[in-house]
Length: 62
Image (cartoon, rainbow, N blue to C red; front, top):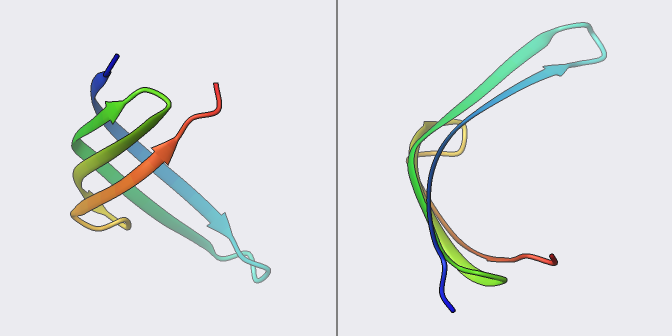
């Protein structure tokens, strides 16, 4: 059985360096889609540190 999941998201990362300098990285997924259950592919459309379009394959263990 195939599963289709639509999603949005927000990622906020704060990194502290050894010199106590904070760097803030953000990424906003405006729209994402994942097709498949344990084996699947995904596409994310957004903006931020991951770029505009992200495509990939995934495997879930559970």
